[in-house]
Image (cartoon, rainbow, N blue to C red):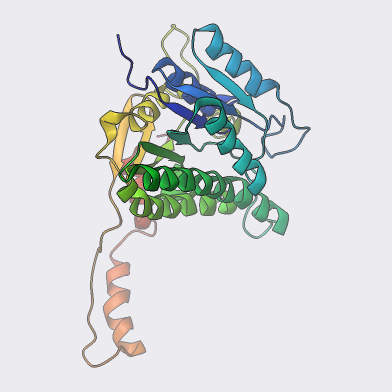
Length: 313
């Protein structure tokens, strides 16, 4: 019996642990040959020595289950290492079909205390890392399309966060990087659609090494049920978005966790005011905008948090 991703090849970055591991295993279960990328550092802040062990262990797990996988030790925030990662997929499997960007680090700090390096390092790994792999995958698909004279198969699944959607006071670097990934994804979706490539972005919620502090107050079930915060709730959506079934899904933002998927619309205009004359005066803006905001709670801009069930209570 044919599997949804039979004959396709995939890269999953940050796949040695947590979400990336679950996503790599799911793509392999659905039939894809996988390049398991991970830099293998021990610290979630990007500290520690690089190690091939996490990626090798996941690749071996896939092979032991009858799938195909190779490991790649590489830092996707490095342009040349990202180039080598895409080249490895093409050389090993003949082409690249699916790119799942998941690699990231955390260096949390309040905005008034954050250092330049804490800002730069998180933007580099998350946002630049997504760009680097996407840039070389996109060039591969464009070249194949020109050679064939028509569209090719290509799927990109990027990883943003609810920190971008609802704010995260102690993560200005992380929230900014995740917002940038959404912009990168929608731009990429428009640019690559004519080549047959789709690009979508997910905001997953899962209990991993990266989120152990965030979900410290949420207990895992003791009755054998799957944890509502298990990465395995996220990976099936990644498998779907990577598949031929999702050919019409492009440039979309989806929140996923615990058996729920929410499709997030692009921002809509909440209110509109026109100047009485050619341009606004200060007094006119004061008369129009101040009453509008006086009638609304201070945190109404974060109402999405309640809609998506992000609050604990």
